[in-house]
Image (tube, rainbow, N blue to C red; front, side):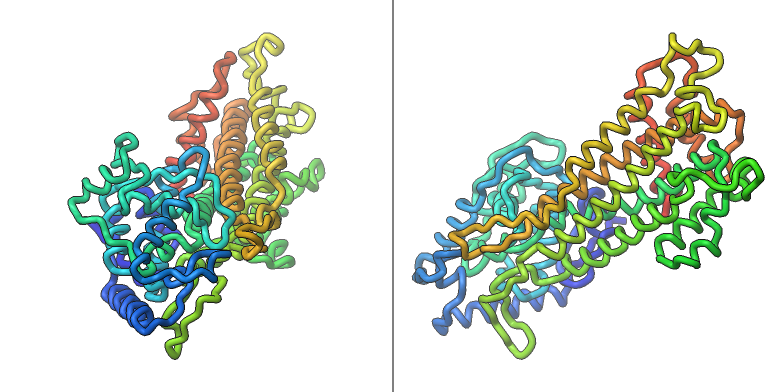
Amino acid sequence: MTTMLELDGQSLTLESVASVARADEKVGLSAEGRKKVEDCHALLRQMIKDGTPIYGVTTGFGALDGRPVPAESNRAQQHNLLKSHAAGIGAPMRDDEVRAMMLIRANVLATGLTGVSMSALEALLAMLNAGIVPHVPRRGSVGACGDLAPLAHMVLPMIGFGRAKLKGGGWLPGLMAFASLGIAKPPVDGRDGIALINGTEQTTGIGVLAAYDARRLVRMAEAVSAMSLEVLGGVSDAFDERVALAKPHPGQIATSEALRYFTAGSQAVLPPRPSRLRDGLSLRCIPQVLGASRDAVEHATHTLEIEINAANDNPIFGLADGFVTSNSGNFHGQRAGEVLDMLATSISSLAIISERRAARLVDEKNSGGLPAFLIHPDARQGENSGFMIAQYTAASLVAELRMRSVPASLQSVPTCANTEDHVPMSPLAAERAAFAVDTAETIVAIEALLAAQAYDLRGLTPAPALQPIYKAIRERVPAMVEDREMGEDIKATRAALAEIGSTLFPF
């Protein structure tokens, strides 16, 4: 049965964004959302009729807000806004990111605080439900006053401009793509132009999907780190519940519990023994590092879910007691940018400690008896290099994460003749978070690939909870005896973890 997500401006979640963006769930307006939009638009129309000054409707935009705009020029003004602000450059955003951006902006409009017309909002929803994906260049937004350039590209097809594609097809002129809906173009007048673009939805569209993926990544990293613990004969004290409760961060407690689950019944992860009282920090401090990542993901989730259910706009109409303001800063992406920078940093740490365990696995001096570079005993060392360069790849990816470690949300560069003299660069923080998650998934896959080889070399049966992961890897990647093309094995291992992760790695 086809489900439909009903927008009300206050109930959107990471899961629902991912479902629409990636699984094509249909979207509509709730009865409550529809009434709020209609009431707010009626308020805006009455204010225009009464001659009330309204930023971006009866005035120009930005530093031109002192220039009056006559009523007969309103529609041209709104159309010109979209055309002039579509100044983005670079490669287009991914389809799922654009769909997330469209959905979140529609939900913001459903708050009934923006003055948008029903025709403009319904056109946006129709594009989303029909699978029309506008061409949205990645670069060009500073995160205030909203993600203007990408959002302008997103809605250009509504006024017959820009480019878009239908599902599975190539780029078409925006007018042709919109015409495929079989509905008339909306007038896009009143406040429609500015209402469609004056928010943080490139930031949150990319950021929400990154945070959603990060939740599964953390759980995957916990499972793979448990594999490394097992093949390296780790000491179980590090994730004892009593140790976690002595430093009771929620993430540390949860990661410790996860490690106990994954290593239950292990033949190799054991309490301290005379020959081994403690481990290296990449093993001993898994709860502290991955627990911090857990907490960062939770913080990002909480913050982003507030952001995507908020009135990211200016002006804002019809607040409590009928309050209307043209002086709101709710379009500013600072809060989202800061939390996405934090997420990126924490996920980078997850990747860094994963690479350190990978390095330990290929180092015969630190692996507890495993052969150098995990070279199979039936293959000659020297003639075969084993998994030597897989760790190089992980090291290269870690270096790139470090190169991108500077927080984007500190990089304000004033714009708009200094009327917008502080901007958050939040889309760059979102891009940084998405890059960190994607890169970390590959690094964790490299660790998993090495751990699987180590199981085979030791002749060790994985702990019961780890056996499905080992099996999923081995179904795609056989144990390596003679050297072979390693890049394909890394990609196949990542695919195996992603496939099993949807069921095995609940957060």
